[in-house]
Image (cartoon, rainbow, N blue to C red; front, side):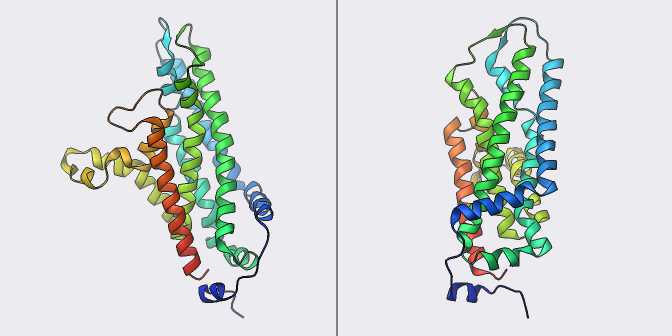
Length: 268
């Protein structure tokens, strides 16, 4: 007997299935018991905090340090650390396809929308908490290493930029998970996200490929747009903090809608 879950069967008869809180508990149990989760979070922490320590050590400390620059320096490690978050989020669903457990999941939860929403919510919440803690620690490292600081730590733009680290990583995780669900491939999802975060902005900024910027300006690429919320002031040539974060959230919402459509129409 084939275990394939046909999309036609799925649409023709949909039993109620587990309640949403039960889906949350189930997805949380999956996420916290997978070794890749711990490895990816540790990699994110090691890279982000490690680079902050290096920045705090090598930067000349003569005279008062502008607090806005300290915030920017504290997030430099996120440029590399975000890749581990992408891997974590894509693996969350990609591993189910690679191991075949997706059939078991969709048999237990016939309504695929709540299942995908629960998986995205749990992943986003875990990354949000981790990202906020790391952002605060990285900023604290920079702050503690400065002999004097010009500016207040309670400035609203500073608070928003520091706490924006968790928001950025959380929204990026939802986008990555949605891409992985749409492609049904861990490797494919990672490649697409790497291209969106690093390759496309670089190509859009290249003079020889300036035409690409007419179709997709660098400031509207997910990584570049979302990064604005971690800046104390407006990014040079980019969007404002909340506008940029809104663009990243729009990318994540559109990707989730596409992933849900494909998940509902295709066989498992």
